[in-house]
Amino acid sequence: MQSVFFGAGFLLHETEESYIWLFRPFLRAMGGIAPRVIITDECVRMKNAIGKILPNTTHRLCMWHIMEKVPGKVRPELRNDLVFYDRLKHCVWNSKTPAEFEDRWQSFIIEFQLEDHEWFAKRYKLRATWIPAYFMDIHLAGLLRTTSISESANSFFKRFICRKLTFVEFWLRFDTALKCQRQSEPIADNTSEYTTSELLTSWEIERQGRALFTHEIFKLFQAQVLAAGDDCDVQQTENREGIKIMFVSDQYKKIREVCYDTTSMTAKCSCKLFESKGIVCRHIIRVLRGAKINELPSLYILKRWQKNCKRDIVYDGEGNVLEENLADPIDIAVKRKIVVVRDKLEDLIRKSKCSMEGIEFLHNSLCGIELGLAQLVSTVPCNTQENEESCIGSVIPKDVTILTPKDINARGTCSRIKGHRDGARSGSGEKRRPGIHQKVARKCSICKEMAFHDARTCSKKQKTKQ
Image (cartoon, one colour):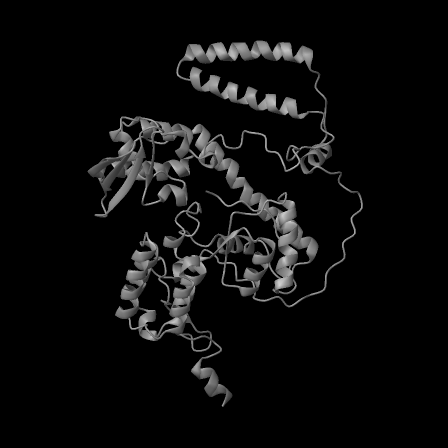
């Protein structure tokens, strides 16, 4: 569930033409395959550009941007009202159907006297583009539930980049930031591959999930398994032409309808957790458990969540292997064979690791293979530059001439890099609630007192000038 950075572009102006200019090469770089879903802020110019270049892409508004605007749109007495924010979050996030959201929204508006509020009225008209209850069938992998992916990426890159850099300096720092970001992926892969999560039940379905899913996904799946055993109960069952309709209760005192197909042994739940996040829900697990099915059907095992999801060779629209160097003598058939050999070797390690005799036998066999392989294949030395050129897929030029671009006043500024003392200044360190800003007393360099002003606004400085 980590972000994957595909590319970036420089925009002089944030106009519709600029966004069209940006989306066209992005679409071309992706082999002409448009994204299924795109999430942006409330920019009309970007929306128009998406409609022209990506007409078949589902466009949704970023929940994080909308919720961050709430404190600046309400009256002062609501700005610091914690009950107000709790009611709003409950209405937005906990509504599972459009009808349920609309009932809660109307109650929320009446309770806080927002009937004539223009901003909330406009957000209600746009509810189908930002309220999760209206697109539970769209797979977003929990994207809207977390902090904005784009804002977290901006915060990450601001640690390396400032607006006064030259183009060359920017590119070097940008490349360093990408390397730091991508380094977290192999670390997570290594953790999932060579460490084992603790099982909390004796169910075979949990053991299967631990073997298949990465650690991050297994934590989410394990929580659903625990809830299925502790909190879910089948209240009623109906039979309709080979399909069982089961009504399952959970800890939230809600009844979910699960349609179980006895022929394909698959189920579909009204909570739509699997359709929206790709994680099988507690209600389906409870139904499968009652049907004596101890393993997850392949339908509920998405490849993107598996540990071995990156083993296969990936091709572009023309059938070429991605990241393949044309000068590389290894052809496609050999690469496919490498994938098979690697999978077979990992399976052998998994089978033999339970006994010392098995590991010794595998080790001796590999040593014998190594000797025979040395006689068949000769080693070819390769220098560092050849390795780098093979990695990037092009020859590194000897002379590079890049002109320094002219300074352009861009919209917004880069924020200050926060240090280790910023956490101590915030007091208790608790997460800030929207709309609540706590001032911290600082020592004034003029009056030498701990107060809520600085040298610019000190009263003694004003008297001295007078």
